[in-house]
Image (cartoon, rainbow, N blue to C red; front, top):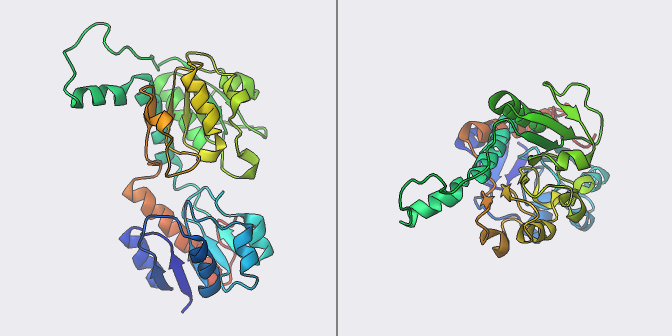
Amino acid sequence: MKTLLITRRLPDRVLETARTRFDVTLRDRTDPMSAQELRIALRDYDAVLPTLGDRFQPDVFDDVPQPRAKILANFGVGYNHIDVDAARAAGIAVTNTPGAVTDATADIALSLILMTARRLGEGERLLRAGQWEGWGPVQMLGTHVTGKRLGIIGMGRIGKAIAKRCHHGFDMEVVFYNRSPVSDPGLPARQVEMSEAMAADFVVVAVPGGKATHHLINEATLAMMKPSGIFVNISRGDVVDEAALIDTLQQGRIAGAGLDVYEFEPKVPAALVAMENVTLLPHLGTACLEVREDMGLMAVANLMAFADGKVPPNLVNP
């Protein structure tokens, strides 16, 4: 029976399924793997099921020139923590779990839009602190969402799901920036240049992580936003130059931000925590039991296909 290292606890249903085909070692911790653990994983196991933060970068592969592991079945659609080129050079397949995360992540984007626009986090903190003095006509006035313009950066599965919710649910006009042409966005939406998408009332980043999108959102692109604009990121933390975002917010050049991901997770800058116009979530994008089960079972399906000598359904480095 092939040996499999699972780097974080997954739902019981996923673990049970994996154990039907593999000799499973569960690393029952929440922190990312250490440098030593990464190297041991490649050296001592036939397969690894890693996830966010388990940084399989070129130096790791260089230190294990003849890895026993032949597949990294990533738990998650994003795999920017794995250098797929270095993995390919080492003879290691990399897979991910697209599709399973789409709706849950889109829902979080909508949550961040509403929470930030309507000051919901701020309002709850006020109430819990016992400082609410009663309803008033000008109390905690926020930004109206219905009928506004949405700018999406990255019109893939998740971007389209966000657009669908905003257009059909909130009558929002949708514009989007995408690096390649999108022939069918699935609803009335215009593909525009980055400057026009960033100038929308609400801007949501939904691109994949990786070298190509590192700091895609930076000082220059944030300067394209209007002072009343609200910025939301549900993609990967390092897509955004966090220092530039903090400076933009502190200077009052945009109205607010909603973040589910951070450049140096789990570290969240004190400057962001201190701002009342910023909504901060602890990377909850796919945090639903059904979704996490689907993600895990998809990762296990990739492992099983590979063990059977087949091409995994979600291979990302052919």
